[in-house]
Length: 125
Image (cartoon, rainbow, N blue to C red):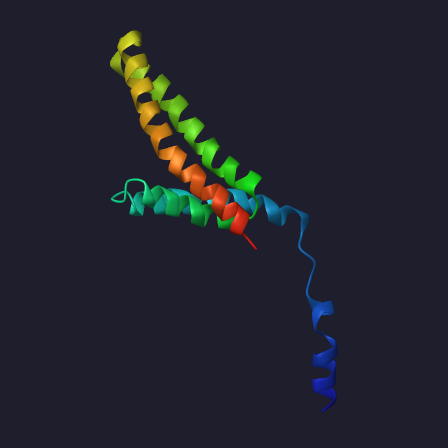
């Protein structure tokens, strides 16, 4: 009986406080969820990206973090495609045009992903 009383008093007071660095993992987790779901739902052109953004936005927790989780990888991929296409073709002008074309595809995928991430960030608990 004495053990039950100790367990009852140890409720919320025994839960450790959230460490300050715990919030930093949410951006990476949100990006990972968005990436994996984008790959799995590629066959749903707009809806798949929206669902991936929605889940990633909820994982991010806030609208600002969700927007960062969408725009950071999108910007990195667009810049990499622009420069790598120039290097790999050996012709800078043709590579730049190919890289810009790939950038348009990245932006086309980012718009529904961003919309889903904003909605997911708003709906996050």
